[in-house]
Image (spheres, rainbow, N blue to C red):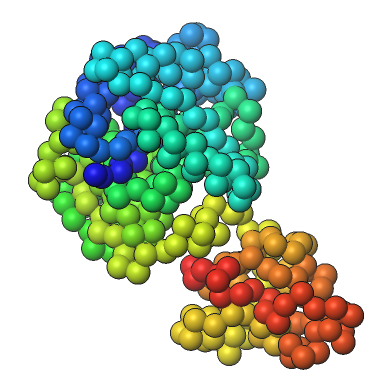
Length: 364
C-alpha cells in the first residue's frame, strides 16, 4: 500500500471571478478515489479557501488587509469542504477537515496528536483534507504557503510520496510561456541551479509559485520521500503515476533518510537564536557526527531558552546546523569557550555536558 500526500493549489480550484471550480475539483476527487480503490492511503493538502471566499465577498483579488483575508478564508473554507465532501460522496468516499497552524507543528505534543489523528482517519478509510487555519493564523504562526505545509505533513505521516498538483506540467528548463522550454522529467538532486530555474512569482490567487514547490520538494526528499510535481488539469495522471509511468517532474529521494524527529527540528521549528562556532566545532558537527560542546562556541546572539531551536553558524556566518539547546543564551554566554568540566563551577549546576546533543541536531 502506498501512502500519498497530494497538494492541490489554489489556481486549480478557485478564482476570485468565478469562485470554486467544482468541475475541476470533481475530476481531481475522482482520480484520488480511483487510487484509493487501488489500495492507496491519501491525505490531501488543499489550498483554495481564500480564493473561494473572495467571490462571496465580491472581491476581485486577494486582499492585503489581514482581517479581510481571514474573513475570506472563513467563508470560503466551508464552501471548499462542502465541495470535497459532496464530490467524494459520489465515489463512496468520506472526507474529514483538518485545519492546522504552525503552532500545531512546533509544539511536540500537538505534533504527535496531529499525526495520531491523521493516521486514525486513514485507518477508518477516511480521506483527510488539510488546510492552514487562515481565519485565526497570524504571520508568527503561519506556514507561508501550502507547499511547505504539504511537505511537513509528508514527514509527519511518513508518506511514501508527495504529489504536488499544479497548473503546469512540472518544472521546465525555463518559463514554459517562452519558446523552447523543455519539461525536466527527473531530478536527482535539487541544486542551486535548479532553484534558480524555479525562481519567479506565484499566481494572483495563490501564495506559492514554482520556487516554493521546489523548496517543499527539497524538504520532502530529505525525509527520504520522493516528490512529483505534475499537472492537476489532466485526468488520470495519478493512476498513471502508480503504474510507474512518467508524469510531470520526479524528484529522487535522498538515500540517507532524515528521522521524523530531526525533520521536525529542521523544518517544523522556528529558530530562536544563533550560536557561532569555531572551526573545530564545525568539523566535529559536520564531518564527525559529534555533539556541540561549550568549548566550540565563540559567540551567542538573540535571547533563547532551554529547549529552543537555535541555528549554528560558522564564525563567518554560514549556516551549519540547527538543534535543541540544553542551555539558555544567558547561560551559554557564561560558559562559551569553556571545557565541560568547568560548567558546574561557573554556573553552579550542570544540565548536560553538551550544548546540543547530536540526537537533537540536524545539519542544514
